[in-house]
Image 1 (cartoon, rainbow, N blue to C red):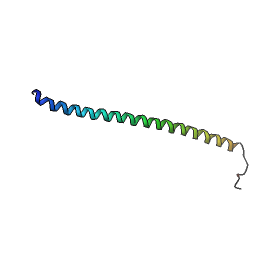
Image 2 (cartoon, helix red, strand yellow):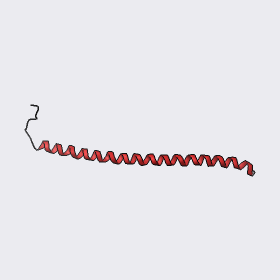
Image 3 (cartoon, rainbow, N blue to C red):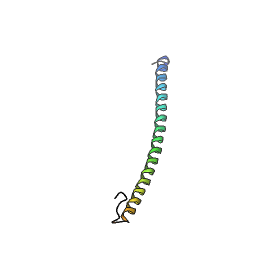
Image 4 (tube, rainbow, N blue to C red):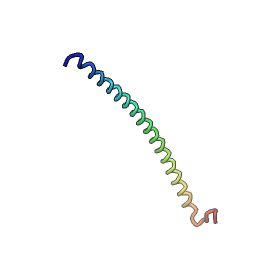
Length: 70
């Protein structure tokens, strides 16, 4: 294959590579955003579990006491 035949093929490959690089960069950014969200949700979940556990212990400390709506 001569030089003229290679140039269009190389150009197409370079264009595809540029699109792939852009896609990978956007994918990486999205993954970082998702990981940040997962970390935040995990922390919130842990705080809610701790609070629920605390409330459960507090309720156990008052056996036989009627709830306020009785």
